[in-house]
Length: 440
Image (cartoon, rainbow, N blue to C red; front, side, top):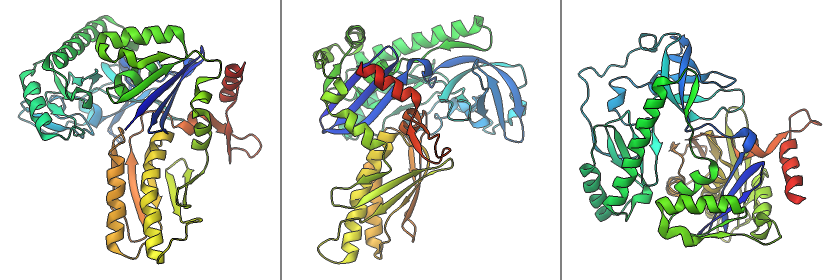
């Protein structure tokens, strides 16, 4: 798979297009006035404890108090457990305390108590941020988890020989200061490179602890990397063909950043100097416009429609202009199977999270339903977000959930239409203003 990363920087915002095999796979936006806080670590103060919800609201310095569920608060037992929602293979489990029973939140937290927390989900809509005390610090090759004693390897590394090699490295790097998960990027990397990453993150955690001890509550203790640096850390690899940037200062900053962690990849980073806007030159702007449309056409002539609501996202599959060459069942099966690839593509591109209902066209044969379901599961493996897919029902419905940590592309770029009182969606005034500034 050929991957290119195009980065557009202005004083107001950063926009990043990740293109895989000429297809826009992800489009990321970070505005200077609306920078996300996911990954930030705060010293918070408990504002309210709600026994009925087994949760607490914690002041972290934002307009709205952050939400902390009991399952996201580390007790002695929780500190010995894998991080919530982990899909990685645990290869070492630390010692567990004698009692595994989770205490109710009212016996763990009181109003006014100061705690160190990390933002797991940005504030979305009317909801405040969701926080956790399960701290995780991502590096280039691993994710360091100081509140866990587990060590694991990403399931995305599927070569048995490589997994065995990495397992030996991981077990040799065991530390009392916390657990860690080896990321996909560590595939083929030496023990020295991985060890250096672990040492850096361990030192970073010590600094966070020290700063947190003397800081008042609420206050920001550690800010995660900005969008550009995060993208380079998480996406840039030997599989990347090119990284093209249109801002000299940011270009030099990223060269320095890559020089510290991935010096061999520096030649892949280039500066865009042409007069035509970078996203226009590489055909990204047109693809962004299509990514905001309700209907998405399939190559066969079928199509899917995507409807967003407050509660969930509904995706409907239709045969459209595709009439097939054989019988109706075969036509429906081929349309559904093709739709699985496009649905996963759209979920990533639009960053759709939460509950998702997919209405496939009804299939009579059970074997075809199973094939479509397996095709969906296989396609979703390319998605970095955590997902959970339930079996396809007799009505052809698939229920699934997808991890939501930031605003969707639609919510980021669009706003309610003033003429239809919010029943439709148009580009927000901020989006239009920034488009004008880029055109000037």
